[in-house]
Amino acid sequence: MANDAHAPTGPGGVPAELAPLAAGDPATIGPYAIVGRLGSGGMGSAYGGVDAAGRCVIVTTIDPDPSTGVAARELLGREVARLRGIDGVCVPRVRAAEPDGLTPWMATDFVAGNTLGHVVRTTGPLSDSTLMCLAAGTAEALTAIHAAGVVHRAVSPETVILAPDGPRVVGIGAASTQTDDGTPGWSAPEAGGDSAAAAAGDVFSWGAVMAFAATGREPFGAGGTVELRRRIVEEEPDLAGLPAALRDLVTSALAKDPRSRPAPEELLRVTLARMTGDSEQGAQSRTALKGALRGQLALTWTVFDAAGHDPAAWARAAAQGSATAASEAVAGDTSGGRTRRRRPLRALLITVIVLVVLAVLGVGGYLAYDRLTEEESAAPGQPDAPEDEGPEPREIVFEASETLLNADTFEAETQERPIDDDSDLETRVITQQFTASPEPTFVAGIVADDEEPSYVSTADGELLEYDPGEEEWVRDPEDVGLSRDFPGPAPYTAEELIAPLQRMAEADDLRVHIEEQEGGVDTVVYTGSFDVQVPNGERDADGAPVRATETTDFQVRIDENGHPIRSFYTRGPVEVRTEYVAIDDDLELGYPWDELPDDLEDIPNAEDVADEDDEEDEEDEEDDSTDSDAEDSSDDEE
Image (cartoon, rainbow, N blue to C red; front, side):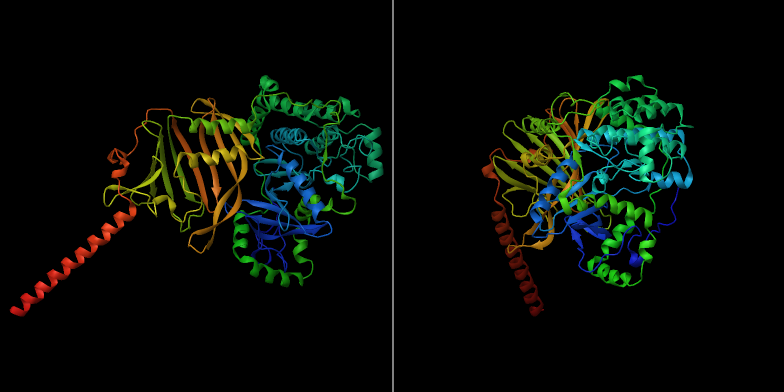
């Protein structure tokens, strides 16, 4: 399935799917290093970017035009909120956004791979197992899109990408930037009328796309827009050769009457049931359906190639810096259309997708995404609003953090590991223990690479550190083990250890990622994004590191008892992984806690210890000097 038109790199080392940066293009946007340009139009531009973890994204910016800036920011803010509400396995997600910044921007997943249209026209129809995965994945994507109150309106073989790990539905709302008739050959008979935005139209498009993927033929043939519209309204589709496992589903999806079409979730349930042979799929929750879909993709999805996309090439290009990229871009612009001719299909698709938000900010302010408002009823044949399925994710995650705060004892272990193996930062493992009796006490043991462990504690409101050289504790140390110039705050207390969990609970895009068992226990993984503080390499007047805000993704796993099991996120160049080992279990505070005096007043102050050390050093120097004088006198006598 390889596409030879996509070489690993283009002019100046820039990945071939991107154009070199032009003079004036930004070197960074938010936490992303900008690699190349995808295009511009409407009121902004689109770039390829990479974050510190090596994730590749599409960063869409809006030019801060004073005459339209307020409207542009408001529109982008609304679109970000709506897109973040789409929680699907087979839909790209919004990674980060700053609608209120000096230059408003939004970052979404870059989906590697070729379009379904390109693959089928190049290599033929999909095999049965891959076809069923495609049917289930695209149905799941539409389920997630519609659940967020959004209608796609442009489902076609060109807005479905066959990525290495599964299908992705992209280009949400692209049709609304062109014509109310949707995408010719793939849109529903009612498109262009009063029901143009109905979710049932997406189901019709799904059926047409599945027929094309299975047979290699467009179900209503080829031709001009007017003729295609006539056939869709008046004639039946060509479904010859469609596998039996999909025939009834595709037939019902292509019904002329939108009220007769099934909902995307029904398509997903039936397709998964036929793939797994499990008739109970129809009773599963949406979260369980997503887990089942992931399992089928892992088992039977054909590993399609990434269309020349190489994240390492993006990272190398980003490392060259904005000055090099800009100078190469100037030279590249004088070479005619060579660069653009090397990426006609993929680059055009990406540009159409990412500039949907940009184009809608032009004349008329037409929205890129239609939403079913509270006043609008769901289209016939579509699911009603989901019933109450229990506590919201934010309630569950917040309650999990509260179980730690209210526990009599708990133990956790945090690993802070540099993402880059060549980093000068060291890996640190921090073991945290807390007991409420006989008094609230928190102990952290820190091991950095192969160094001796360091211990920090808070007891009775005072910060303590163990001095292994002196084998004693000191109070209020100025430079304790956890306060080195490592990105992020130092968890000196139980509250600071738990703080990331509580910020995860407050994330606007918090969602259920997957339900599965771990160690025989039912668990749920929640995902989202939140802001962290990361040193920017500068220091303030006092010499302390200056920190900048960065948006990063997180995961947190919670068991059936509401106890946190594990959390994970990145903080600049560092991965932070915390295992919550035990809650309300018998706990023996680790060495050297048993050497702590009963009376904290007996613990010397760090400054006093330093003064004593200085006095001892001076005495040692005086002794050495006396011994040296005595030796010199003895030599003189001899």
